[in-house]
Image (cartoon, rainbow, N blue to C red; front, side):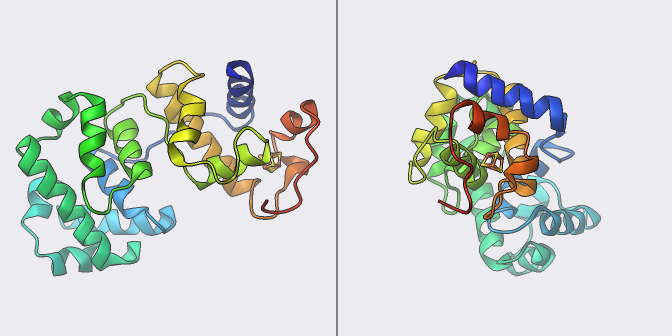
Length: 224
Ligand code: SF4
């Protein structure tokens, strides 16, 4: 399994190159992006972050000083802005209460404790918590998303219904605990999911077609 997962990674890296994730100028900006990107595309998140930056609001203290209404207005381009404003405020309340408002103190804590605590914050699920740990904290936790699930179920490495922790364990139990590897691997899977492994897959030109053929797996025709 380790060999296959690494072969897939090296094939993707070789053909698609480094993805330069996560786009963000600071750890806090990465966290804001991880929360805002839920159920929307990255272009909309960028617009919302640009507005926060223009208003000099990209710090925990600046956002904490905003009313929910004002924050929602600023992040409007990210969609479901009232809900997401609440989630950002929930995260900041957690940060203040548990770590005195300090991201440095947050990431000095034990990774398992941080994850468990993040999952208690209303509106933060496993994918967002793990994105924060990996991309803002440089902590080796594999991020699982819908693209990961679709690609690896089509390649018959997991079942389509596999729960989050099971998909995550596939990677973390077989790959070295390496934040840079997990960072790039996840980003490459997103690139494949966007360009090739769509609802109707484009296996003909996909860099991973070789893996299907090597394991005698018929090409999928649509979401399975
Ligand atoms: S598009 Fe086809 S070859 Fe590419 S990842 Fe999806 S199932 Fe695999």
